[in-house]
Image (spheres, rainbow, N blue to C red):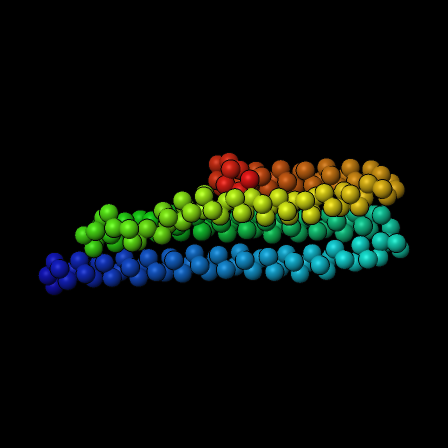
Length: 188
């Protein structure tokens, strides 16, 4: 086997691994979008029962329903951050393969095989602003709406309990964001 065949074989191997890592990223991304379906299904099941039966349900049942929804949303959100962590790792590995492939093709400055680095730029410029609005909407629905429903009810301090738990859950989530991204600028 001469050097040219060996270089070609190495390049083929790099490309196959590059495709495999890309497929794994795609799989995790699709799974994250499926979480929206899960979140919606669970929220509908839990949210409507306390609200529709509000006239006959005790305020404590409504509070417990809202807390259950809050914790489910938080669990799905943190699980999504775990998936984002894995995707970020795969993207860092893909970047290495892309560089090796460009070098193997004798085109280190080519604009192709730059998915990982282009995603980072795209994510910061386009994806993050939309994502921050999405998270703001979720917080308005999951935090503000239950407080608004609980404030006029007796006992009034149930709204305070919910607000305190919501702040605690939000701080845990933001702590996870900081651990993953080194700050909250990526999503807020």
